[in-house]
Length: 264
Image (cartoon, rainbow, N blue to C red; front, side):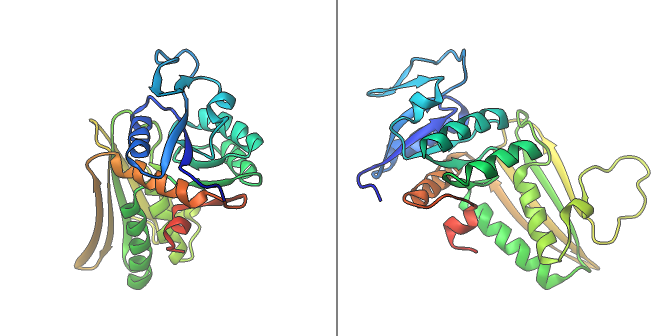
């Protein structure tokens, strides 16, 4: 295991989450920013973020001195950066969502060569929520209908969100269901009665909301609601840095925040 500050490179360094990641690294006493990657043609290329660290569009240059990469971007950019990280032996923290099946296969392939933490949400509280949701669904049983409502900012590209699907998967797992067969993400027109065992996920988009998640378990005459509301993106960056610390010195493999937190 290497000593000294954890050497971090950031993908999408000038984006909303990139700014939070850089701030979290700057405030930490045990980490330092050593690389910053942005897309080709970005107006901020060449900008010096810290002494000796400029924004570049070359992943090899951005990752040259890094132990771990933190990436909140888009699937295409993440896959390209993952390939470089895997070739260079650099650990990876990935918060990108919306991967296609082939893109997800690239993530799995990279994990054969380097240690990766991938999660649709890096909030510690959200992962506690996921744990509680799974337990509640198991204890209440299939007699309680499961519905998830999520609200995110207007610029979010994928729907339902990866976090909402992660919550739905937690419910399906405890009930022994295949989520692909019971997920209901769209309701419009004459849809008929709610299918037994369905897990509904409804996506709302608007404004600059970092994220709200409501899980409703609805029974006869009563319901249980579990809710998480994010006011800022600071805790996402803090969770990602926590995952980066956890990866230091790990063998190749694909991990979730559950492993980082010791939940499973």
